[in-house]
Image (cartoon, rainbow over all chains, first blue to last red; front, top):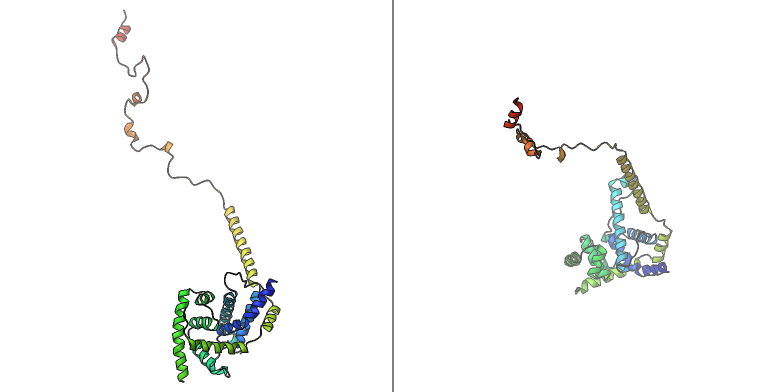
Length: 171
Length: 124
């Protein structure tokens, strides 16, 4: 019964979760799907357990963020060990460039390009606040940082993003 | 928190609509996650760590217990009952037994020549 309810909640949050996963994977769609699936596996086998101390959304986003970070670390380790190079495989998935995402709306394309130039923390805070409609407190909880730190990243990120978007518009 | 940024909000809303429209459905990912075998590596690792720690503890305890138990090391400091001060010899004066013991009644500690004794020796 409880699991059924959790599944329903996760289904409702799924579009937002995918958006967050995309952001964590720097818009690599395949990687974002893998990360989201890996997060669901963690929830199903009990490695990630919701204890009700925060909202389900912030908890789920923390799980997704941690999963993405683990996968990134694993990719870096593999790259360091040169397994990919020796086996003749491709390197870890590159960051999706704005050009690669052809067909996107112009506004979305410009925003994605501007966001990709920001430091990760600023990008994450702006995504959580503007895209996911979280408060700064909730964003700080997801990112496991202090509220003051989240506020600083928010203001700096916003200024940098406006600047970057102006540059995009001028092109 | 004030968010008077209608331009940014519009841009993010456009991005959200687009990404969520093109995203995968929940059911395929959830079902695939259910089919994917879990990775209970951490509990196994934890159990192994507990076993190793227990073995190390038991080995240490056994080694500690096997150490030979000898007599306690002799102390270089003499006990108080055997201790004598370095200036003790100064107290060894002639006639100190007078100071150390009560004199017996009817008898002097020293022999002095008396007149009665001379009288006794003289033959009458």
